[in-house]
Image (cartoon, rainbow over all chains, first blue to last red; front, side, top):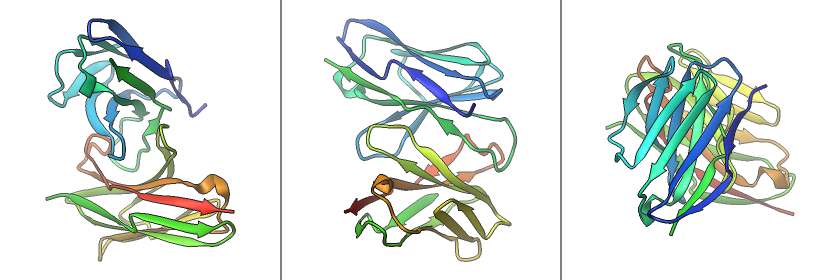
Length: 114
Length: 114
């Protein structure tokens, strides 16, 4: 199983809503990532979890709140988002080793903030 | 400044033809170089990953080359199919934590016409 599964595939939310994005992998990877991708741009790293602990936060606004309940699951809690937060949100996972490790990406959640 | 540049920006070819995409990078330190295929609105899918000592790597009809001296890579697609229409992104990993510091190219948008 080399899949990273993200749900939902599409999400429309108002600026006062609270919602969560979910990501799941069963490859035994101990590193998990959240990326944000705007149209025609490369993905931008948001958060990195290593061994279920937050290791990197790329200065992401607090309206995005990540959570890693266990080694297979990664959540991104959303609250009071702005229309400019509309984007494709990608989850990825990888083994934790120095070189030559692949990152496997999920299919993404297309988020629209209205 | 760490940079990855890809050419051409876009390419249209007829089904069944071959094509080659280029990637030049100035990234230091260098850990590995990956090629991803990304369909519009979907997550990137890994095609190849190469470390410093690898010159060529194949994945079906995709063959990637790496010249670490000139800091150039290419992705050759043989006998193109309509399903090859996508963006192809060159990504260079920097540093020891190879998935934390990814420098993304802007991608080449490939369109295969019947």
